[in-house]
Image (tube, rainbow, N blue to C red; front, side, top):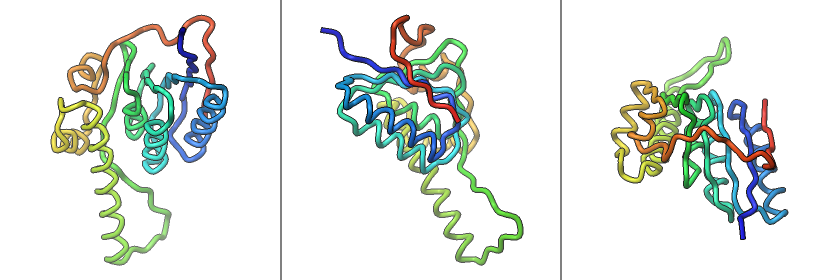
Length: 186
């Protein structure tokens, strides 16, 4: 008997709102006894906290999750991509690993304590992202190597993502003709 599969196209920035839509879609499909999800991702990244929450959610659901980069998967979207036990990309896909930053509102003042707190949060977020990516590579890349790659803004094409251990296979086909596809956009 074939597994019931739902495809979710995540063509959006990573934000609290888009990750909430992703989680709600998954929850609704789980009620319909879906056993496997394929998350099709093309995203410029975004909110680190939302991306890590989405990753943890997908890793913890009672269903199989595969991910497929169908364009550019950048920044914290790479973390969402890592939630797949099987990870695919199209031949002309791109991945971007880069450091964490935060936005400053105009006329914001920082004292030493506030700056130190922001630096600690940025470092912890970067280390969490590096840990997730290193774990996904199953030993191909050590944490310290991924952390260095994040700090130097590393771009990977499809072939390089396989060598890196991020992607398992290059596949052009995204879903079958009669597949159920749920779209998540900004």
